[in-house]
Amino acid sequence: MKKRLVSLLLTLALLVLPVVSAGAAQPDPTPVQTQAETAEAAQHQYSYIALGDSIVAGIGLPDAVYQKNGSFYDVSGNYHGYSGDCYVAKVADALGLDRDHAINYGMPALMSNNLLELVQTGATHSDNADYTLPGLREELQTADLITVQIGSNDVLMPLMGAVAAATGGKAFKLLLPMLEGNFREINADSLNTLREGLQALDLTAEERKATLRLLDSGIAELCSQSRTSTLANIEATVQELQALNPNAQIILLGYYNPVPLMPTLINPFVDHFRTLNRALQQLADRYGVTYVSTTCTAVANDAHPT
Image 1 (cartoon, rainbow, N blue to C red):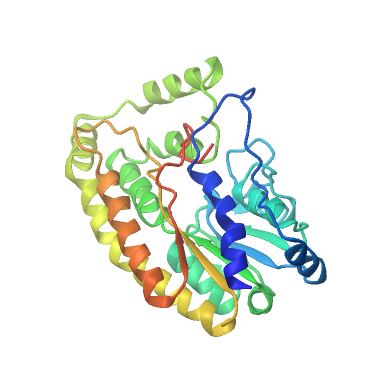
Image 2: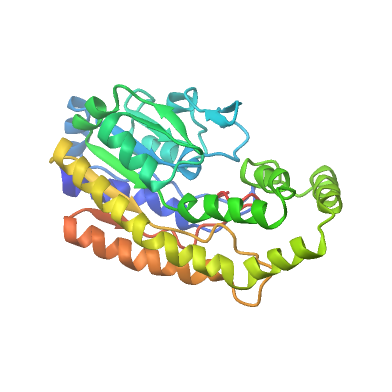
């Protein structure tokens, strides 16, 4: 069963396809099955659980189901009602799974330590994420396929905190909409909102100095500090998943650069995510799970995939 699922999951290559115009011809992502495979699939409805952050949830897509709940997010309606354009839906469609057998547990602002805690206990409560899934461990025990995409927020969340600190909190309200999909489309309204936000910053000389220092070397330091803990948390998550369900196929999805445009001579995220991808592939090899590269994923203006 694992080998067949690997071949079917080639549909994950949708992640690395460049954006094409709406009128361009699209290849059919549905894998070709033999009659025997089709008959067996009819007898066994696969179960797929996608774990991760807002990338998995499909935040930024117009029909993603989520809302702010105080300082946190409520995406419970997205677990089964996710956008047909997110990659979880693409995989589910290719495998012929309905929304009860392909569940999207993508959660905005989730970091790798949050995901580990969720898998271990069914809940996570922190300053950035507050989610409770009391039945998660039981669902994971019966899943045929589990995909994991996590770790980008491990550096982006501290970066948001560092930018807020450097600017005296002035930049936080400008940064947050960029991660919530509000600037996904470049139009007159979004450009005007961005311009007004920049003008309203009104940084002091000391705040400008701190911001430039962050751009010059601070981001690279944040990247370096986060890598070790990110990989340790993912490794512990894989260990927990394999202990819960030794028969499940586990897919680790790699990283793309969510911030390709930086006002610096060298974009520190390029090396950061390239290094993480190499380490994640090595981790996958050690534990006998599958690594899927997403390095060529096209990114929208809000750091989420198109």
